[in-house]
Length: 289
Image (tube, rainbow, N blue to C red; front, side, top):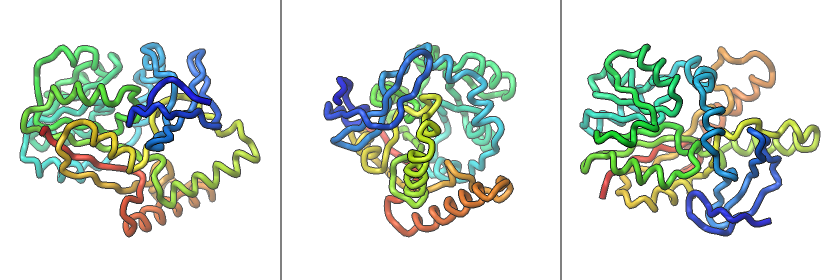
C-alpha cells in the first residue's frame, strides 16, 4: 500500500506502509511507513499542534529527563575543541547540558516547546536565557554553536527545521547534533528484533506503541544521507553506543529480565566498539560552507 507523503530524509516517493501495529493517539491513527530508497522508518500523518501540546507538556520532561542525571563531560570535551563561547541548545529538555556549560563559562541559551517548561526552567536556573520555540524564530540573535540532542527524531519536518537553524548559526559557527539510531546494526538491535518476533507470536497487541514520540527511526546510512543534503561542511559523523533502551547500570537491576537487558547492553557496546558503523547513537558535527 502506497502513501502520498515523501520520505522525511531523502524525499523519495517510494514509500510503503509496514505491518507494524499503528498508533491510536488523539483520535488519530498513525501508521509506520518505510522508504524503499533509504530505508527510513517514519510515522504518518504529521503531528498537529494539538498532538504536540498533548505529548510534550511538562510531565513528559519530568518523566523522561528530570528524574535522571547525565554526565556531560564528553560533550564538553567536544565543545571545547571548537574554541567558541555562545551556545544554543535547541530542545534543551531539563537544561542539564547548558547548566553544566554555564558553569564552564559558556554563554548559553535554551529553547523548548512547552510554555510551562520554559517558565519552570527560568525559575530553576539563573543567568540562562530560556525561550519558547514559538518566540525563538522572531529573535535576531545568532550563535557560535547550535546543539540538538535527541531532537530530530521528534520532528516531522527535519529538513525545514535545519534550514531555519542555519540562519541562526554564525558564519564560522558549528552544528553539534546527537541522537539515536534505532534501526542501526548492533547486538542490542538484533536482540530487540528477536524479542519482537517472539512477542508478535505470544501477544502481538503488547507491541503497540502508545504515543508517537519518535517520528523517524534511522540508521547510520540514511541519517548521514539526510545531513549530506543540508549544504553544510561535515567535520565528523561518528557512530557509538549507549545502553538505551536497555538498562546500563547495575543499580537498576531488579529482576532476571533486567539483568539480561544489562548483559545485552554491555556486550552490544563492547562488540560495536570493534565494528565500524555499528551502534545505536550518532554524533554529527558540521559548519557552514
